[in-house]
Image 1: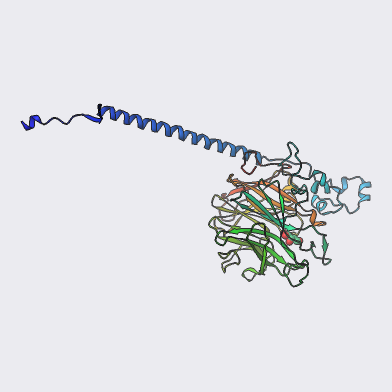
Image 2: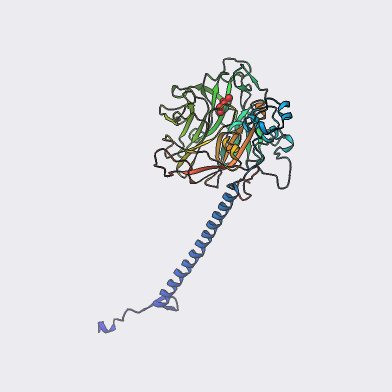
Length: 468
Ligand code: GAL
């Protein structure tokens, strides 16, 4: 019968000529394969996890190193006048009694504390074991030619493509003088210096990328004017490097910003123009480029009583009509902005000219504000160091590529008697922990993470940091 003849569908499969494998064998080999795959992915995953854990450990170790709270008894307030020997008082009747006065006193016996001499300079040409790559806040810092770095009130641009940092700042390598009896100490405009580095410690001089003007007295950059706090950002859309700076006249009444442009990070920059942004006076300033490519100008305005912030146009050559007043009535200047984990942070100084004062950290969810003040970010050292931003004034905060949450706080230790002698105070900055000052709108509950700048007499980036 047809039915009888019809063979039952075999449970065996013909795999290839001559070999027959049972269904169960196939199922088992499939299971085996799956198991092997699973095992492989587990091993792989655990490799990844191990790498993850190692990275976290490295990061922790780094944080521990950089965030160590270091006391400093070198900077001590001299004993009050009464406790000094009467003979000493007689010898120096005008001797300052506070360390800040000592700092500002040209002939202070403590000068070497604030402005150590050449013998202690950071020198990339010397191979000194255990000393290379150490940052010594306040010491003379030599470039690869052996000349002191002249990049005051500066900022850093990181060019990822080449892994190079460019440090731009005021070249103040000229005589300090007072244009008027009551005017601020000044140096003629020499220009904006640029230095390049791969490790943030060894800096090669790339020259003056925007020069002062010698002849034309009507030019913004005429040497008798003021050029301060230059900052450079790169515009991906136009392929241009754009520099913004504070432009002023000798009496600080022009109160403007200047803009310059270049095709290369090492210049030359072409000066475009100056303006009063949004029609307001503008003195200390900075620019900040956000992750989405939108850049912002922040400037002290209304006679330094408040800050203004607003986005730049797409080409970064101008401001738009959008502007917000922030930190109104707080009298802050020297703004340095950075972003971490979606929150914006800013460090500012008070307005006391070249004299140091207490820094404040601020935070905001939106860069346009509102900005809240969190208190003094300075940690360690001693009370005087903390109350004077380590005898320095903020200029820039540099994120460390590859180390999220770790930054370098860059500040200027101004030598008002001889501005070319001004020093750099670079210190580790970290974001984390609760803010230590009750905030205005949060019923005393800390909303923001604390910004901490850690004092170190000497410190270095960890060897495993990719920049070294
Ligand atoms: C400071 C300012 C410096 C410079 C100085 C002149 O307040 O931050 O950039 O302008 O005043 O006295």
